[in-house]
Image 1 (tube, rainbow, N blue to C red):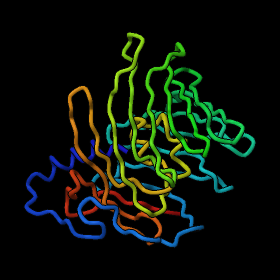
Image 2: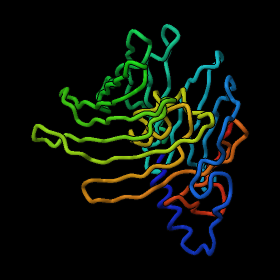
Image 3: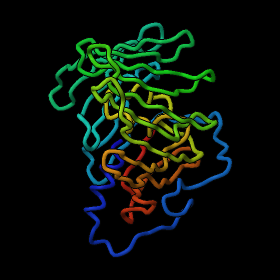
Image 4: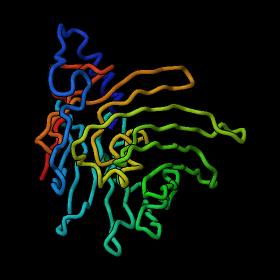
Length: 275
């Protein structure tokens, strides 16, 4: 999603602001709302997640006549502006034709392999445009690790994931191959979530390759990403960025960007559009 990049951009843009609204449910940086949302069984299909300050920045989802996702167009700040065009076999996504949104050129084809429980087990690109990835699940069926392999079959990067009882990612520990037979600890992210339905819940596992893994981790899980505190080991950089939401009871409808727990502007930055 590029929340950190967007937060930095907005922080610079609003340097002349004289006041910041910290009101609303959840307080500064809060998810906005708590308690039982009574949304069990309620489902809304996300059509678009768009940046209100620049309408050319968005995530746009299309569905086929059976109501299954057919494509995801991902045009967010600092991303590569790519499209997943999905191909189904045996009633599940088997491949994605990865396309450049700006040139319409076909970049590669992503192949999805599944385990015996029907979960995504691994993915690879036929032309090696991106590294292949392995998805590791725990005994309860929760995603606990993602491993990225280079074209030689060597582990390039991996992330250990900590999940809460509901299956939301609440911490990631990232490691990068140090080219000396070991791995250096790259960064850690501690995340908080709200208790509302996440419109990306069924989509996120198929959104890797569109952006950095950490941006997709924000979208993963049944509840919405509220904020994350990051720490980069190479330079000790740290900070907290996130969202402050408005809801239609069950799902988010708009979001303001927060930095260090405080909304950056006195207005919403993103809007969720549903079918």
